[in-house]
Length: 437
Image 1 (tube, rainbow, N blue to C red):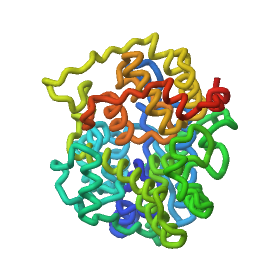
Image 2: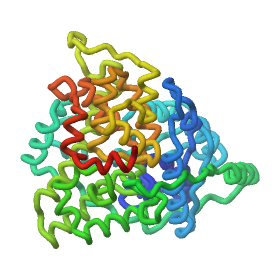
Image 3: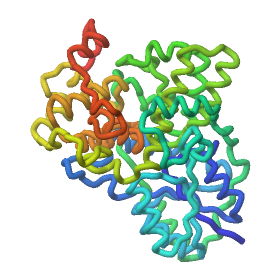
Image 4: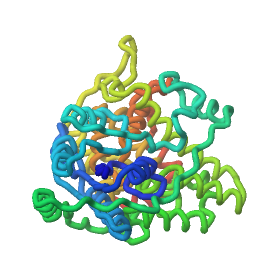
């Protein structure tokens, strides 16, 4: 009889979840767990909640979907309050096991959790599974990852590296173990203390209206959205419309589900290739592949550089001259609230706070404005995005802010987006500004 713990992290799905499939194949009894970390409600050094209300609500939707799927298969998602490194050793003791399986997340805080659990006597079997491409299939080792995205993409395409096939949903989930009195009492306590979030106010202007069933969190909504997106042939126009500012159709909107792990990149890619087979490929469909490669590149940068990506200087060499990184609370707060006086920036920041979502184009514009116009600290901006964005992804968020700040692998020393030019290019009639100001 083998009892194992499966620790769900950013992989809130049953389809194409290799780590969960491994757990199901090895266990006689399996305990699926999600840990609500107390640091999520903590105040950041910059003075705001680390995880804001939109992210909390979308997570709650995602967990409810996962919980329903597990119940339908005769199991249950155990939601516990506390740090994984504190609660999982206790859970393992109650169950008489030492084995935990989970996905690998190659970011400093997430890696420290695993190290702490191992120090507590647990055997943690983690599996890398969040990227489209398997790192082992790349034409170079992680420490030889090209310094430029374009070089990475070209090397991948020249070598003919393609994603592994997405795995089907697990056909069987092992049952929970029989409840000893101590285990039953603790389980009842965790159930009664399960996280409940007050719903956020919905906003009809949102480009990702997660209050509507078709945009809610969870694997079920993700799959339905994937089908709708390709049925409507929106992939063919993706490249032409991807820099839009408002609406549900200008971009793929895959990112919130990818970020929570309700949708895997390989499942999205499989749907894209099936669409190309049936409807034909063009620049739009290629650009979806292109963006999925960008997502992978930021993940592989973490495998190469790790904690260096979290330094104030990022990847900048000691000899490289950088503008001072100064946190200016007044200017930063005006930026967060959308009160800088720069209309396009203010409209974008108000949308972000009201809805938890912002177009990719405006993410670049507002990040550039904080760094290059307000001369603020890029780390504070990255933390605000972490708090607000429904689709916060530790890899992409860190990579993109470093890129704009000139502290990543980009050779141009940062990217400044002229707000007046961006306004003329992307909101010449003022429709977006009128919507949010």
